[in-house]
Image (spheres, rainbow, N blue to C red):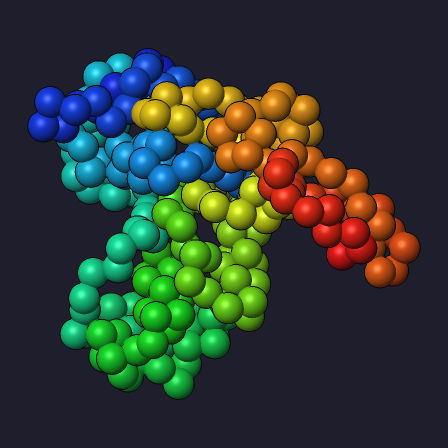
Length: 243
């Protein structure tokens, strides 16, 4: 279990996170949502030891993150960052060769190519493979699906579900509210460095926060197959009719 209590992060005289408190449980996927600049990346960085000095507490099964040695921290969390670093190494080198993860993500043919030479989607999946190769408790994905096509998004989704099935905690930030609702067991909503909601999707949909923060409202529509579906739509937008 991960327990965050009154977490505060200040950088350069600016408060990035302000009194953030929540709890994550094993075997669940949590979606982190919020507008640009709301604090999503700052929160993920704090949970993965990017900010060694912070106020409040971040505890894994009662042990404070700041009190853990480097090796212990590495066994607690793994990160797929939003901005990927440049790597001239090959996947085969980074994963010590022969990893079954390459097959799961369809990367076998790219294993001997330099990661820096790959396309954006291929690089994203390569860093996902490196994250999955880590044995950790919490796996954080910062906007991992933002620039991926449908096939690659499915691979990321499958990876998150596999981690959940293994009893891991998964925290993934999204811009797409409908996808966040569909994939997650719970939502964390950030606004101006504060956590303004933590709970299930149904509670969020009825809270009014989607409209206040994003200008979106939950609506029911009839699909082309005659099924009722619920989607977030712009409050001032046109009725999409059948979807």
